[in-house]
Image (cartoon, rainbow, N blue to C red):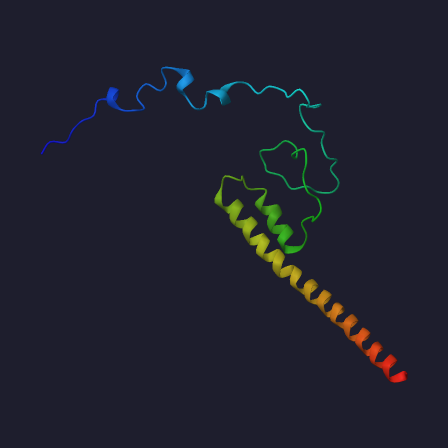
Length: 136
């Protein structure tokens, strides 16, 4: 039994590069145009306060970034090491994932402390109510 050999001209996708209008990516190959209602070409940059971690390939941070939770403790040290490694290498991603797990472990004592304080306040309020009821 002989295998059939298809000729290129018989393939449904043959010749797609001959006519640019038949290519699905043609609208994206045009240079971007500014929207009429846009008042800027690049957003104004957020001021940098403190240390901001960024990829080695960036000359400066992106226009908007978060400084709500600055890197701290062992997880922050892991993040600083991770951002010294180019982001296309696997150790960069693995270190960031490990830093996330370490951050969870670092925040557990604070979580338990908050719960203990909340429980203490509830207990104090309950004792106060009992004393008020007995005093009547």
